[in-house]
Image (cartoon, rainbow over all chains, first blue to last red; front, top):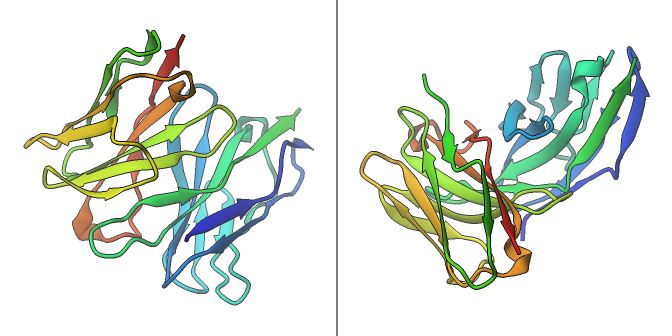
Length: 114
Length: 115
């Protein structure tokens, strides 16, 4: 079946540090890949996405590149801010037909200190 | 455009009881999915509804059931509640015509506590 593996957290960084959160996946076919972010007490927000190999998703300074050869979709940001503190989830969608369910990783808690 | 709204935001139930959670999809979205997020875990897919019919289900027992209404709003029903059902329940909507790469819009969730 489909699965997503994220690096274990928590991750604690100082403001303006470089961020990488690793994500690898196993899926049949050609999945779409996503990063979602969850702020304390809230639901999930779509951060970025990529739908085919070598696509780069980007938003709010975050980037991730769909690497089919390594089945990876690592999240990066060059300079994190305190406001980036949240839980980050890597996810894939590989359903057939009209079934587009998401398979999530376990999440990585990021804390950014001033 | 309006987002996905869920009600109630918090709920406490006793083991063995039944619960109904509600979700209003984002305007223009015809597909709704429900996810269970246990504390410290990623969301787990419960089921999905498209055009008022279930068209996908995760590894959840039949006491988890749902409905989708003609206006694309949805309900999640859980019977015979167990302590392990305590979790954040997330509703997500999407527009099928955009394809699977479009992604879902999530609500803020309902926090269910079973005591």
